[in-house]
Length: 324
Image (cartoon, rainbow, N blue to C red; front, side, top):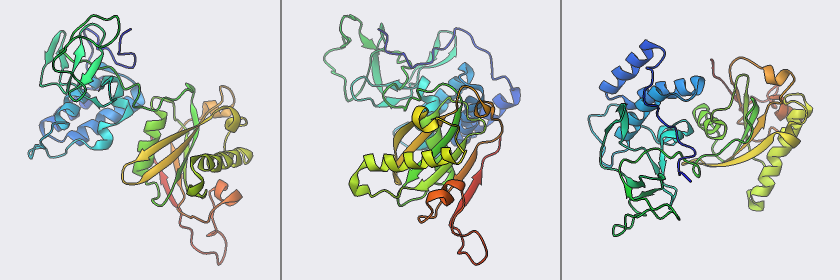
């Protein structure tokens, strides 16, 4: 058994990015030490085009440069924590088999069989890719801990993927609807993008609708009641024709995600049916983010609150739309 089931394997040779101006832009940002902007370019490419060796080569260089222990004052735009944990980079990450810590190796394939080698965060079995971080290594024993392997821990340290660190979507068809339930701190558009990335990496999102709403279940009753609250809303959207028939019972799953500094989010992901209008949706992802804590029932499901109509109080709702 190889411990790289989730990993991207670099081919012996690969083509440059299909658009020369894209390579020029990433190269320029790299030399300007604007790592955050360069990774944003790579992320946009991976979201739309899928896995690509040259895109991953750039990502490894940028992510490895951005995870150094001592901040470099010459870096104009450092790598953000959200970029470091993006599931789109998971195929080129290395995960510790002991504690599930992950990192991006400095062994970047520049040319076939030529690697830029730096001080590794951990070591890896050269036979099966079983990997251990520095904290989990036994410095007295370099033999591979995996049973019946017989290999030794050393370098290079190549990607393994993050099988224990990334939510996996069991639905492979197009996605139809995402509901985010939050408490106390409303979901911003930027965070909604990140949560959708975490819960729906690599899924077809054309025409996907994302709603974000306060969780009105009593948190003292625990997560089970919070889940029920979300599922009630999903059922309500289905009843009003905003989700295709059978979405609640057969195509919806719940992904709990801890949002740094913002608390726990429950993300309800509904896959589109294999046939029917929802599987042929096209166009931009649309976000409906509700801030009205009193909005519920049919009004909340339709996206309208108590601010509609003459003399009604203003709605606390915000609308965001992402194009392309």
